Structures are given as C-alpha cells and as structure tokens.
Length: 317
Image: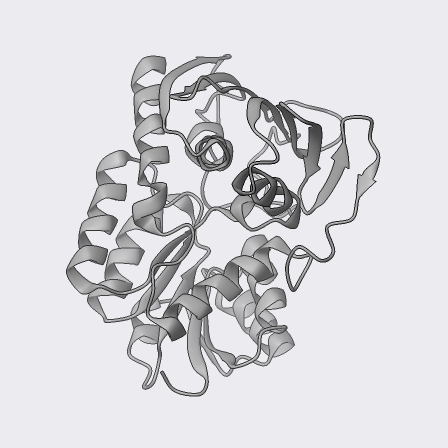
C-alpha cells in the first residue's frame, strides 16, 4: 500500500459528514473526492473539509489516479449497485448500513467481493461502539453471557427528513436499515446464529409508503432472545437503546456510552483508541486494507443478518 490511502466519499449528507469528521483523526488517509447529489452543497462540504475533487457522479471519482478506496454513504437503494461498481473498478469499498435492501442484492455484493478479493465492509457501527465492544470483550473472556437483549430504536420522523432536518431524496426503512443494526449485533454478541425470527408492523404511512412502527422477536441457537421495538412516531428521547440482560450483569448501551442496569456510568474510554464508533469503524476499514485481511463487519460476516431481514420481510408481506 502507498503511505497514504486515498479515499472517495460518496454521499455528502448527515452520515457522510460523520465519516469526514472521523477520517480527519486517522493518520495516513486522504479524502480526495466527494460525491453528492447537489453540486453546490457538495462543494460547500468539500471546501470545509479540504477535499479537492467534487462531483455528482461516482464514476468520475473512480477514474481518479491513485484512488484506493470508496466509502458509500448514499441512499440505501443505491448501495448494492454502487458497491459492485466500486469493486469492478478495483477499489476497496465500505458500504454504510444497510448493505442492500434485498437479500438478492446483498448476495450479489458478496459474490463480487469473492471474485475480486478486495476489502468489502458494511457499516454495522454497533460492532465498533466502545459500549458494545466492552460487552463483547466480557463475552469473549467468559465473564458475561447474554440471556436477553431488549432494544428500542425510536425516532420522530413523520416527513421525509434526515438527521440534519433536511429533505431526503429517498425513504428510510425500519426493517432494512434500523433493524439491521440490532439483528447483526444480537447474533455477534451471542456468538450464535439466529434460528427464529418474528415480526409485526403497524399501519403503512399514506405518503411515505412504509410502516412507521415495528416489533421484532429473535432467538439464537444458544437460546438467547431479543425483543426489538422500532418507531418513527416516538415523540421523546431519540436513538437506539440496548439493554443486555445476562448471567453476571445488566448493561445499558446508548451509542458510545455504557451504564449498569442501575444507570451507573461505566468508563469505556480505554476500550479502544477513540470514543467515536464511526471513527473506529473507518479505522478498521483502512487497517484491513493496509494489512490485506478481512475486516470486522465484512460483507461475508454480516450476510446472515440480511437473510433474517429477508425472512422477516416475507413474513410481513
């Protein structure tokens, strides 16, 4: 690998900016191109972060000399096709969650990864949040076993807006996007595949065309269970909150922070080199490229999650 990894970022929205913030803190990585839907807004973001090349077409970025990798923070419906486009161009790729919004497309990305051998990673950030890493280290050490996870994923989003309050060009989805975080995390923390999955959903929104409320039950082969509640209708604290109930403790994870079951804060500042899950996710991507290895949250590792989502979608339909 060259001394500096040159990366393009596609998607200058709320999550793309989080990646730019994280990459600023990583040595030996240079963002050389920014791809966005609206040229003026993309130029504005590029100027702020010192990115020289701006375009509205990913193909333009892929032609840049010396480009090594691409991070895709684009609309969900574009993820699989763009990931394959990057791999065909010989570039390592990290795809923000979800990898795809269908099992067929997710399998197509994996097939292309196997064909090229390039690092191909999905942005399942929960694997990298220090809070969940702390629990995972306890599990690997044999000091904690998950009996049950109780998870709430709540937003107030009755119009098609992103996290910055800006109008979206696409529609978010509770199942293929937000449930994907928990489905993958549950299996990863249990170290056991999901063998049963059930789902219920509320009414379909008349203009957005999606269910705004959903309930999911999961069971792993080792008998651990998970209950996941999701809503775009929640007018209250927003975000995803995880309660781990196990044999030796109860933990509550709120993004990068961790608490006991009695709401006592646990110091997770020494779990990794940063307290920012997005930055840690990006560090893993670039480290895997440098070291020529499979990353944590590789497409191959997360594909079982998309098999479960596919089964749930068929059940709901």
